[in-house]
Length: 251
Ligand code: MF3
Ligand code: CO
Image (cartoon, rainbow, N blue to C red; front, side, top):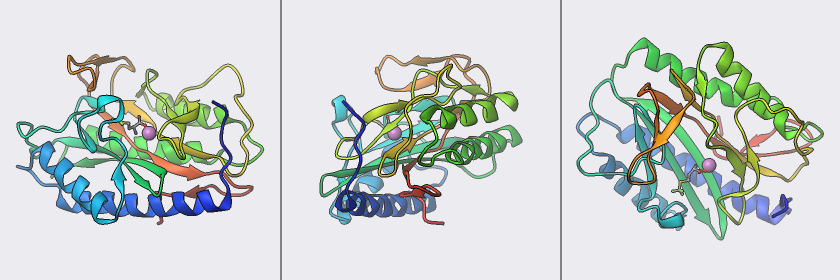
């Protein structure tokens, strides 16, 4: 499928989808506490999403059984919420969510600390977020897609982290996953030219140890191959002639 350029009306709808998703993330962050199950997070997230008249994009997507992906510690992404998985002080938890508003998607992820966490965990969360902001320095009309990929990948590898290569960011719009794929590592070509009206979900997934990942037997949960901690940070971004607009982050 070609990369879609969004009309003003489509951008309006995606802006609203993004605004609502930012609220969902803020509410989930406030609710996080030790003793909570990952299913509690999913239930709360779905309730907030529906309270805004939106549909959770992930629910039943390719058979995914929940609304919020909740990935704890060595889980990279796509953790399946469970009443048996209880958060405890010292954990880090990745929350990935998407909403559909009037047929248009937004997609964003955050990684949070539960209570006091190790310095290594704090640094990982911070660097993963910084990777995103390095990447979007290049997210502007006239630049090339893999300028973003290179900036993200270098920022992480220069600091000794492993960059997940088996999963990528993506275009987004009337579909959760649209062209193009957005790797988080340096490519040996330029990639497509960025144009205003493109909407991209940019989502570095960064590990303390090896970049290598594995899938659990549930066929969804992605974990680090060496068991090291992993973090995820994502926003839906609108390309313009100037600075990109972060549809899922207002501040
Ligand atoms: N942010 C994730 C992604 O872009 C969410 C997809 S989870 C799924 O891949 F359950 F919907 F597949
Ligand atoms: Co995504």
